[in-house]
Amino acid sequence: MSSINQREPVSEIELTNAIATIQKDYIPKIYVLQGHGEYSLEANPEGSLSEASKSLESKGYEIKTLNIVENGGIPDDANVIIIASPKRELFDQEVTALQEYSKQGGNLLLLLDPNIDPGLDPILKDWGIKLDNRIVIDGSGAGNIVGLGPTTPFITNYGNHPITEEFTNSISFYPLSRPVDTIEVENVQGTSLLVTSEQMWAESNLDSEEVTFDPQEDISGPFDLGVALTRTIPSETVENEVKEDNKAEAEKTDNNQESSAKNNDDIDNTNKNETEKNNDSPPKETDKVTDSNKDETENNNNVNKDKIESRLVVIGNSTFATNNLFNQQLNGDVFLNSVQWLSNQDEQTLSIRPKQAKDRRLNLSPFQATIVPILSLAVFPLLGLIAAGITWWRRR
Image (cartoon, rainbow, N blue to C red; front, side, top):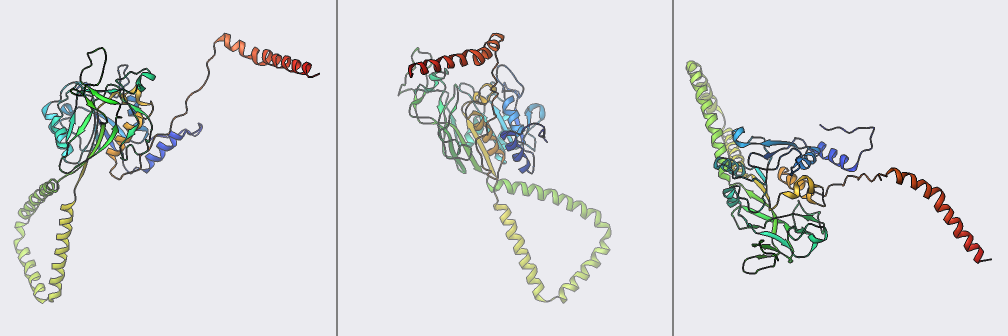
């Protein structure tokens, strides 16, 4: 558990994170997939998720790396699994394990860059996700203003979703990103998160010197760069788990019956006594037992009707969450809110992070440190005195 130094002033972000941690009655476990060239959690000049990991830990999450092959599967305590731009294709067994994890109520955050095929098509198909390898071009010129170029779309239009509901007209940006499309799938509900403007398009040919929109080859905006989806798990899944539990209970019952076979005489005597009691009891007791059985049957039916909800967030870019861009504009908020929405099933309010106060100290060279006192204590007062004298002389 993190502590706050009482000798130092508490910043708004530290206080907010401390309150959020106290409100949790458990520690969510977040796993980041490794082994296929994904971004690591350790600081790296080529890009990593170390800043994102620190921010999650400050909010009370436990962050771990996950190599499915080495681990032999997916841990049972995984609340969310993050897959951040794998450079190599996953093994079929890994994809199957992730697919089963998702089908049983697991939550996934997929950050997938263009022109890379990690082999996640079975999972994407289950959710009705279609990825496009074309690069998003921002024709508004916003990227040129800040020196990032047209291949960096600046997003100010967000979907109506808990992840982005506080982002109105604010900026997030995604260098070298891809469109994310959805198709209708039974029991799956999707919501747009990041929506491009009409001045953006998905470019299929980046080899030409001048990038222009081709209506025959390119996709015109607006379209989605990120989506959030929920899926209601069919009741059969819950029933299968119940059946497995029943089998285990049946095996225990069989063992108990075998161990109690030696006491058949006592069991017969007990059955005789119970039979006599039942014959002497009034009919109302039977009615009560019947009603009780009905109530238990109804409760069991309600349990069977309960359905698990699985969640998925797909964003056609991963660099926005890396160290260099994480604290720029709302990039970090998009990442953190996505993880919080995936891990919290109680629909807690998501919002923009309070900003850490910046260090605005002015570092002076020795010459500057010498000249500043001279200007402030001698030159400027002397100039003021001269100006006052000239004004007095003119008004005589």
